Length: 372
Image 1 (cartoon, helix red, strand yellow):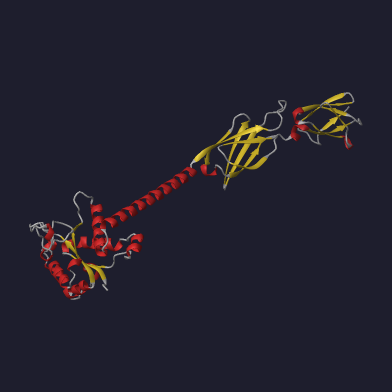
Image 2 (cartoon, rainbow, N blue to C red):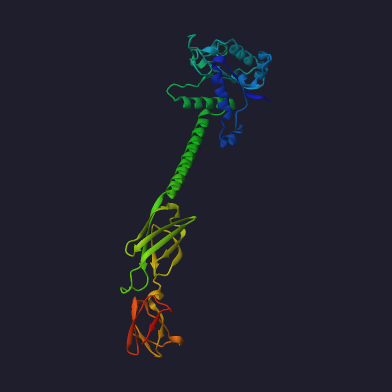
């Protein structure tokens, strides 16, 4: 059993790239279906990188050899700097002596392999020695390097492809198959992210819309039969109860609707309490589903101009004629008569024993008509 999946060998100038590669591989999660089908782990970790994983004060080279022995693969970060590094070259030689020549994975961060130019050659001498390049393709023993900066490909895409190549080689997986699965997973993830963003934007839009004020038009109609002999309905007060807030407005007379211009949209379609009060009318207190246009009925209080209520004084007459009706006085000369609303007036003629007087509405028991 190996303690590490891989030992990362690099020259100090390439330390940043080495750490980045370590973190990218260790964070990568293989597709779950692939792990189940191929019986491979979900994560390729841990990897050994001495900048992170070795303690100061240890005998460095001895410690590094021990960690190489505990590593299944050797990842060599290749660059012109690494090609000249005695440390990187000696590490490759030691790993080969362990019998793991075919478990070396070069990762190119700069330069070109087998270039023949010391300024651009990225493969260390030990790597070229153990994997010599042969001009005969059938006898070519060169090792394929994985390039982190693939020409003609974006940096991010090139890096991701290179990381997948390393993972595929360490787990002995088909790279094209792994890349295809990763692309499918990314497309699904992108679709889910797009869907989530759309849902969030829709929710924000709905929240914004629900917070916006909308106009609510209230039309008010007189429900009782029209009677032009009565004063027009006036001073109509309409009140909307919206949770802990109330909105009120006054309409001078019937004809034009009331307009509440700043009702929060979230109340549209909800049940709200509405009050309607007007002079000489019955109050209305109801609950309805609020819409941007609502209609409310207003009913006159028929007792205001219809309940004739007074006392006769100075007569014992048994008949009194009011508004075309005959009324019999009660005890103490009390007169009571309810006139239908369509016949109501603001004043009524009262005839008793051939004498005529006028009672003005509204009236009550304290009103007296004296017959002389």
